[in-house]
Image (cartoon, rainbow, N blue to C red; front, side, top):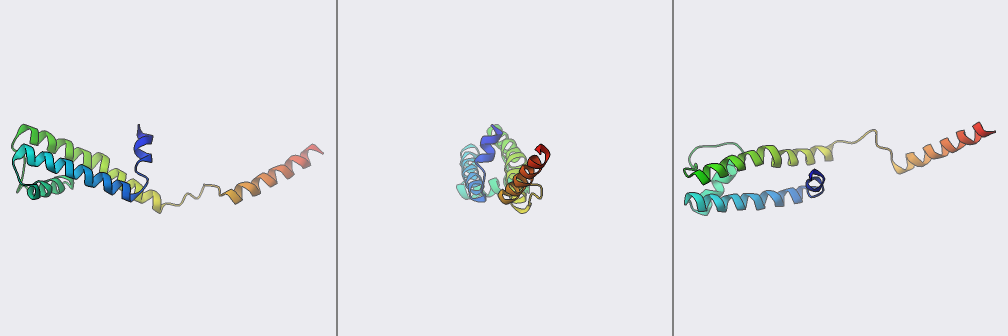
Length: 119
């Protein structure tokens, strides 16, 4: 399952699409559960997802409170790490990774050593 998530989030564009879709779903649900207009629902969704929590808009219904808990945990434990992980992996160069040229040179060296040891 984690491989599917990783493969589905290979770019910032894909992650941004996941973020936009999930914020839209949560905003629509919040507007439905709490009776707020869509602008206020989006405001609440972004403020809650970013864990700012101004307190100007907050859930009153049980469904809204459950949504808030799920959304806050989803953004903190899934979305944020995916974004951070993607950004970090693009910045880090793996010094231990062999390039194709390095692998070919090593194979030639090994072949020479192998020929010399068989004589």
